[in-house]
Length: 92
Ligand SMILES: [Zn+2]
Image 1: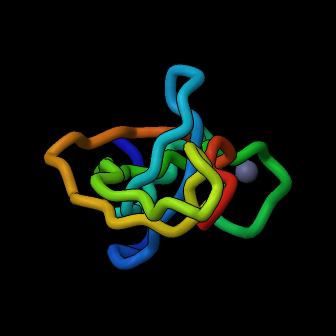
Image 2 (image 1 turned 180 degrees about the vertical axis):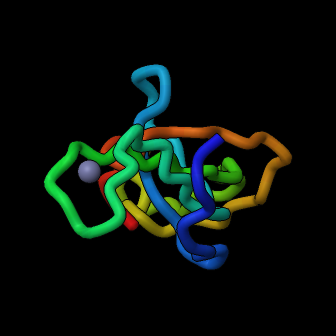
């Protein structure tokens, strides 16, 4: 199924999966568009991202109780692989 698009194994993305905010490292993208045009075209593209889920394991406390420094934490790679539409990614 699909075509391997490109490898970006060092990039981290935020995305929603089952209505939950998740983070993961993008392994690669798969183009599963039904389009078979040989040249560039305007068909709708469906690109799936294969992502290895990352679990935050440590947050940094701010001086305010229960408020943590946003977007800065230690993550641990899990063995969970998630496949999400590229358009579900909002921070790459
Ligand atoms: Zn096309």
